[in-house]
Image 1: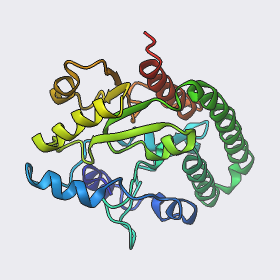
Image 2: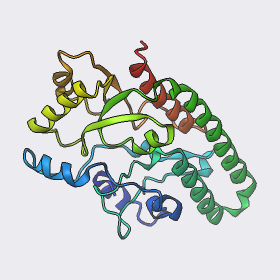
Image 3: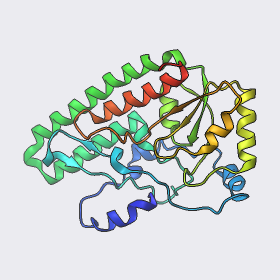
Image 4: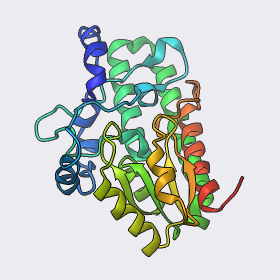
Length: 259
């Protein structure tokens, strides 16, 4: 579980919660952090390790159409047995399929809590899954022109999205965005940018370290921004679809050199 969620969740301990990473459909699809063990040792040379990641749970939420059918699943936990933070990629909202499984699980829980609203809940779930399918088709078309273009991201968060839509990541600056990469890691990244002819390096609105500017200085590599939290998107029936489309546009703008 993200460290910043400990206090908020403790205050809602009596409220119904769903451990999303414990759902079989999600648990079986989890992937390990890229190069988890290698980077853990490399970063230890320059930094003390911290458990906190500065994330926001806003995009771990799905609204199913009305206030009484809204479930906050900030309980995006990976504390279940066998899956520890830092070992598995817990950015599961970046996977459309996991988002669908999340919606199905929330629908089932809400049916337990308010069976009298079955018709409305069923309609909301159907609307979400239909909209998701249409959005995935749009994203496939948006990203098709940039599939073979290499890039680096600021932190290792996007694996599920990249795998689903066939993107070509070359690597990342850090696993934990709260930890700045050391000098040795930055040298490796700069070498990688040049040798593998990277097109873009992506920063994030929440973390815009000066090291990105320093690494690309003197190269033709462009700097883009990916927002893995959709921090500017208001919650609504279409917020998850809007999030996927916005993220796709952020990729394509930099990789295609669009303003």
